[in-house]
Image (cartoon, rainbow, N blue to C red; front, side, top):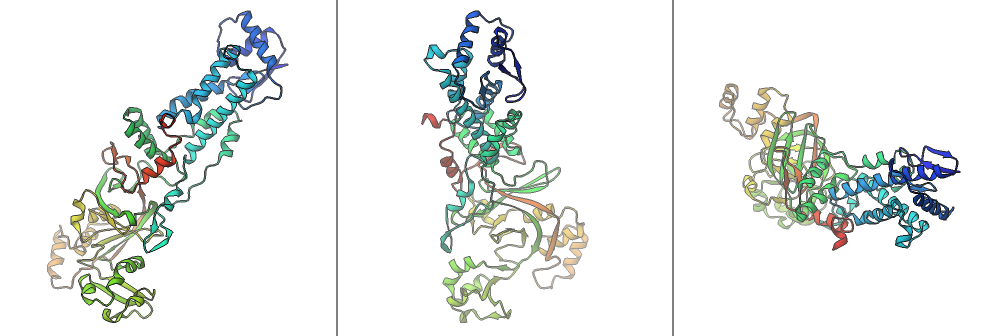
Length: 496
């Protein structure tokens, strides 16, 4: 008894019929796509001979004794189209080899090319299986492990450990799922559904379709890889804040508008980490408690220098008692003991500016105003210790507090030394002209509901304001890392 493999299912729906001439005819129609074309006696005889030559011990996921599944042609057609669209190399997915062996099978070219069916079918099956598993797993998990970013830079102030700049623990590639799916009837659906669903990926894929420049195609492909990682990705048409480091730009995305502004971010040695969080509250005229790593690398060298502390409005406070200490009496060892904190009072001249936007994270970073407004005029604005300085802090606060009343906004203006716009605000300011500065009509305000925040790194990115695909320089060298990791699989790698 021979079995004919159904076109609808790859390993399911196999129907037994008696052996004979009809078997061979139907076999060729099913496996080799000859439609209603009449088969010659020579063809029937030839294929029957090849079937008889097939070793009974030879098995595979993409063929059986009835021939090659129609799914094999579907997989080849899909990979031929999608692999180049993703900026990947066809050789890395065995596409030339698969096409060649399928041609041998379809045209019954075994004798003319001097190969046995027992050689071609196992080889074809192996290549199809490797290509299927490699592509579906890569599309679902990424073709590289992004944890490599956390082994790039020694931590400032503690060079014995690496700085963590990628604040995710994405799931590792799992090839067992793809291997299992490969043997099931819905394997083509699984292949097609492997493409990332993020709107960024879809925008980049569309850009790739229009791009012929090899350099730009490679840059797009590098950024498409970021979309594959199993991490939290921005959602389309959702209220959120996006910070893109290479663009040195922030977008506050609302339901019907987008607020954009420049940012200053971490310098190369003190990179701003990539993360997802949510802004939960803001503080106006905040005190800046200087992180211990900055005390260790910068402040400690000025221990006992009263002029330095006065110039920067720094104070030294005993953590246990809360007492403010005489800076001339505090030596370097005491500053590094962990028992003291160095802080800068809020108001004019504070390094955080007049407002700070807080969100949970493990790096003690935040979005904030700045007392150095001229920095936003620079082309390259990688200069902070890791925090993100925003160009339009009041506008960002209004975006976050979109449901508050006008007096709350006016109180925020007054507290930030922004001229009031209402009669009530001007009257309040007139009555309190002699009050101590800074005014503190608002010192704290919760953000409800919390607004999602994504700190991203895309050098090719769909601009949320314009919709255009923007190209940006690789400020932290992360693209180079991805390029190196994907060198074996990137477009054109087989010809280099």
